[in-house]
Image 1 (cartoon, rainbow, N blue to C red):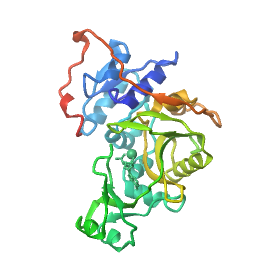
Image 2 (image 1 turned 60 degrees about the vertical axis):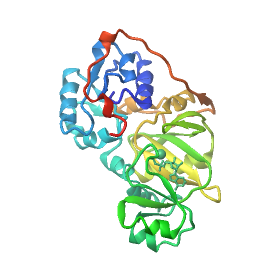
Image 3 (image 1 turned 180 degrees about the vertical axis):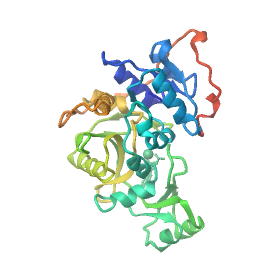
Image 4 (image 1 turned 180 degrees about the horizontal axis):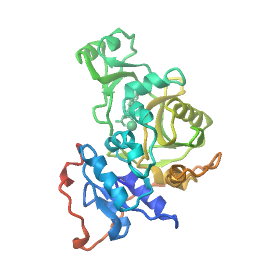
Length: 322
Ligand SMILES: Nc1ncnc2c1ncn2[C@@H]1O[C@H](COP(=O)(O)OP(=O)(O)O)[C@@H](O)[C@H]1O
Ligand SMILES: [Mg+2]
């Protein structure tokens, strides 16, 4: 498990630790990553940053040395390099196909892919295409590849839009004014969705949901299922939807990995990390896994270890902006 310091990493580690047939190794670029200290000392590993050219080679060597069977990553920048060399890893990669990852990590490509199949907000690259559209202002402008709401802004007039010039690293998008949901989805090896669990993000702190509840809503589940089909999902993804002016759920974006709020989805009845492990091992999944409505609040938890146990890493201070 890489990315052991993030909330998604911690959720995956905790889920897998509940299985008696699994030994979990936890890795992160930062020796202070909390999830490292959920596993025994001999199974903690310091990794290079996902952007480093040697990252995948180092992981291949580590998987061989530690006899790893399945590799999980919850870090966006690690996923495409790992998926590109999937067959060389020596371990099964519990992540969607490279084409799925690349489509999701480019919000414009994602909108183009999904538009014929489900309600997708009008979306153009900032430039001639966005200038030609008859927008109903305000609209949203955001980075084509971004995360954590960084760079998302509202644009109130054509003059403000045109002032952005020609910049295809940005997309202009119809504003969806309604309620927002995250739908955690898992699809089996044939691409059939076996669970789609919508949840609210009632309170969000630093991009991570810290309070919310799961909701049974056939339309949200059907929309997220259509997204999964459009992107050829095998495995787990987090589909973000928002209702349009008429109340119809429309696509915001897809994170092709485990989200930080995964503990809520697990508690509602769908243990996606455990199912994803079975999928990666080639085991059959159930046809359908049901969930119940449940609410979630979260707080920080303290873990105390001997200072000598804290792993040394050189990359620690740079994580936020990388
Ligand atoms: N078209 C849109 N209409 C309304 N709100 C939006 C729209 N696009 C983004 N937002 C708001 O900005 C947040 C972040 O945008 P998102 O597309 O999820 O990018 P990321 O989470 O990768 O930064 C969303 O959760 C939503 O609240
Ligand atoms: Mg988002």
